[in-house]
Length: 225
Image (cartoon, rainbow, N blue to C red):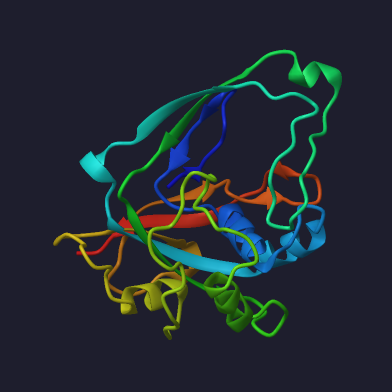
């Protein structure tokens, strides 16, 4: 899996926890939305409140780096689930040279996310999102298209006073090791007994109308005892 951070030049760095923009895109893909549905993406992102827990750390405790090179032409087309080939945009200079990129990944990692929507009754609702994850309109991936999920992405519903409280009420994934587990949660979603190791401004939001990442939110990182 690949939870993208701020990309620097051709370096695709990753974070240990998913970004709210990635979760928004995952749901949008499951619902069958297109990138031109910018306002719908923005409204959904603005409603998401979530906490995340690393149930299983990546294999070897390290990230993998993949060197990628490819050159595409303006006439190249891609397969889509809509049954129609999709062309490519961009000016003539876009295709003059190959793309050279470095992309990081986590292998054999397991992350559990608990989220709610504010307001809860607007569309899409949690019920609609859960149905979309179970029967997605398009194939789903975790961060990057090569990162296919190995298990169903929807686990079920759980109650809690906060996103972190709901997350802690959910059982650990099968194969989780004994010990403490790293957590990420919004600053205002804390619970008694869990102390933040650090609180910081996380820039993981996307301006879906402009297409650029920007804006941030205050989050906490800590661990279970």
